[in-house]
Image (cartoon, rainbow, N blue to C red; front, top):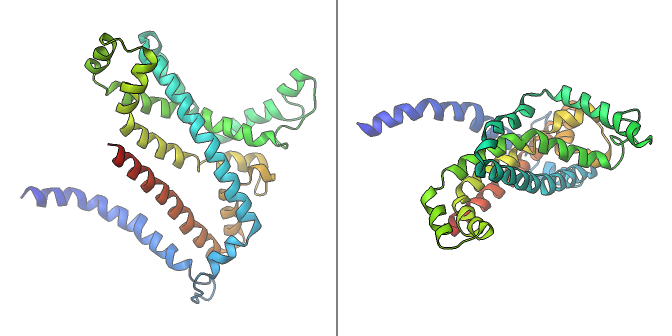
Length: 272
């Protein structure tokens, strides 16, 4: 009886996932092996085509560089702030202020960027220069900074939830045994954060793919090379009706993200 009741509760969710996730992905997967117009089976031709595409290689490299820099910085900064807030009760009431950037529309944030970093912007006026920060190589680091600013608060709250799930008795026992702050963090706090760390890492990785609107509003469909990401080439393929290439690229992206998630899960399970 309990199994039937559980199945009834699960059925609506499974039906929604099947209709809105699994079936569309199956259609995209099949489309990646066919031409978009004639639906003729072409095997791996679409995959070979995108690997030979210099724009795809550029976008993939920039996206990988963005993730390699942005995600570790986000984890470090948010964990540091979470430790500070968790250690002092007076800072606890300010934790929700860090969530405010999530409520700021992308268009508003881009307007602030332009006011700060354009040739006639505040930063150039302050420095007495006429550098186009949004058009130079520094645009990439401005993009990383916006990713940190946008996601810092949410990641901070996740870290705080993990920190406050650690039994206080364990921390007190470590201090009684003479463990200092660094030792207590490395030997007690960090090992007990492994479960939260996996979730936060995966969420941060997924959020790193959600910066398209900001870059698009700054540079349009064809921004400078430093900030030309995978989201741009997918958008350009869609505009040019290259649905076969877009399907192949989407399948590759899912495989890469899924592979990274599975690898992280295996590493976490092995350590536990």
